Image (tube, rainbow, N blue to C red; front, top):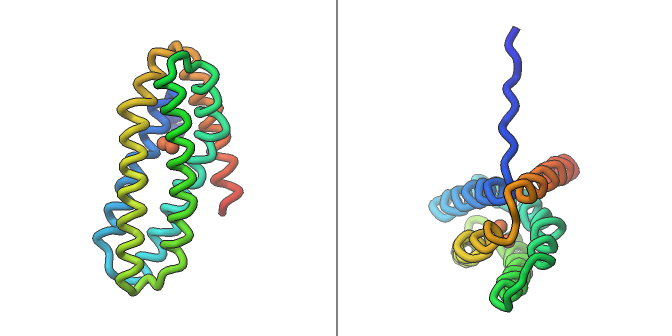
Length: 159
Ligand SMILES: [Fe+2]
Ligand SMILES: [Fe+2]
């Protein structure tokens, strides 16, 4: 009898980076896609992924990071990241409201992509790097487990 292999538990940073990779790929695909129906489908996937990802960061990872932050630079990373989430929240509905067959959609999708790619890069290069110093391995594992559980819940509620 075949037993289902359980995916290894990722720590907080590995989990968030995996999400980033998936979203970047979806955004790149959207950028290269012209067919309206396909654009709409991709945008729907991006919206779900981005919303769930931002929510687990805002509920779990960011507050934990803020509590640990010692230096003013680390606090700046926290506040900047939060503001960038706010920009994504403004941009996503703008893409959604554009006609998927038009030039405006392509332009808005490109701006959304640039915004998210920039944000994810800064998280990875600055915030996650700082987090590796601020948290120990067990803490990162525990945060990862909490985010994974919450992510499953949110994904279920979005279907
Ligand atoms: Fe983020
Ligand atoms: Fe992120």
